[in-house]
Structure formats: structure tokens, C-alpha cells
Image (cartoon, rainbow, N blue to C red; front, side):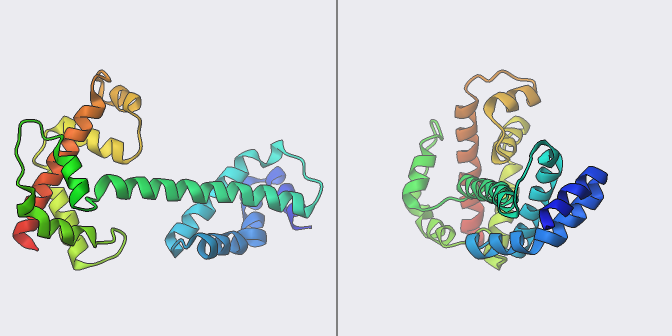
Length: 208
């Protein structure tokens, strides 16, 4: 049976085990990701390699009594990895993208003591709301270029805080990495985010 070859491969050598796993189940796992969760090719392979890495680390701890038992275990690991990728992708989209006018009104509240004429930016906010971040387009290029320029307009601490949060580190982890106290870090993050979004709107308003 295929699963016995995979287990035997990992017992002998991890490379042999990975080879057997890929040859026996790789196409099914990849197809599952693409068909059921609509991942693109790069994402499909990213999750497949993550699953293979996970399996390689834990497979010898388990006993399996049938092909079905092994396949169910394998696809559960794979599905969890797919869902994790989708959660990260969604969080990044939410953190980067200004969605619509009402969302920007909430963001602007973090700009303490600074007035923002939202009506002036309504057209450009409408343009941004229609963009799909993972599509390759001229407007997306302008958006990310504007974001890069806006990031240069804030302090090093604010920039580090934004980038670390966008990579899903907790405030406690960020405080440890930056050697600072976790004191109002969430508030500082929201204010830095609002600053960058305001500057991004100003840049885009000149270019779109």
C-alpha cells in the first residue's frame, strides 16, 4: 500500500520518505487545494510543501491501520495548512487595504488632533476599493508604490511596528523584538497605520 511505502521511506531516510509522499499523494493534495479552495499554482505548491514538511516531522509518532486511516490523517493536516494560509492572506488584505469611504472614516479617527478632509479624497478611496491586491495591474503598482513612499514618511519605530504586525506578530512579540515595552502598542499601531493611509491617499490623489 502507498502509505506503508511512505512510512517505510521516512524510517529509512527523510528524503526517501518525502519522495514517496510526493509521488504517492502530491497530485491529490495539490488538486484538493486548487479545486476546493481556489488557490493559485504558487499557493498550491506552497501549502503542499508545508504539509510534506509537517508530515516528515511527526509521521513516525503515529500508527495507521489502513490506507483510509492514513489518507484521512494526511488530508486533515493539509486542510489545516490551507486554512492557515487563507487566514494569513485575509489578515494581510485587511491590514493593507483601505476598503471604502466608511472604513477610512474609522481609520481617520486615529489621527489625533489632525483634520482630514474626507470628501476631498472620496474619488481616490473609491478607486482603491475596487482594486484586488493579488492581481497584477498598473493601478495596483501605483498603490504599492504609494504605500512604499508613505512608509518612508513615518518614524523607524512606527514602520517596524507596522511591518511586524502585518506579518502577524503579537504585540508582546513585537515589544520583545524591538526591545520596548508593550505600552499602548496597539494604539501606536493604529495611529501609524492611519498616518500611512492618509499619506498614501495624498500620493494617489496626485497620480490616479
